[in-house]
Amino acid sequence: MDWRVQVQDWLRENERSQGYLAGRAGITRPYLNLCLLGKEQPREPVLHALESAMGLDHGALGKAL
Image (cartoon, rainbow, N blue to C red):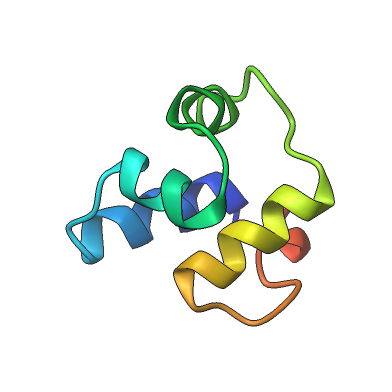
């Protein structure tokens, strides 16, 4: 599954905003939005920060790249 779909599903299932997740991950909401739209490719540290913020295992999103 594409990492973007995983993130969007998590946001929907947890009734959270991109701003909420971005803040927990230490990135900006505009940057997260660009990544989710496919206009930016996040680096591995950003994916790891998102995994931590979402409570996922290390590497869970990276496997979906």
